[in-house]
Amino acid sequence: MKASRLKCNNTIGVCAPSGCIKEKNKEELQCAENYLNEFNLNVKYGENLYANSCIYSASVEEKIKDINNLINDKNVNSIAFAKGGNNVNSILEYIDYDGIKKILKYFFDLVIIQFY
Image: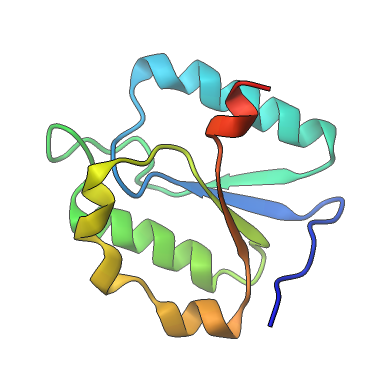
């Protein structure tokens, strides 16, 4: 099984499954969004993308809510991780893997786009 390729007007969901997006990262994220918009791709942010309830990141509950909401959102065609890191291990057991199987999506990291 393979996810469909992205097409014009598709939506990329963005979340931060490890570290939080800090003020200095917002400009980079906006540049990445502008770049994706040039290809007629829409961006939808997880509601906890900027959460910093645990000093270094959102809580496990906040992070897993974002990723699972994006996984199960039929309007989201792909999911991008705005920031990764060691803390992603805390959510692995809570990811809706059955949802991923039902609605195949590509997963990728926005870091490559930020440096394009």
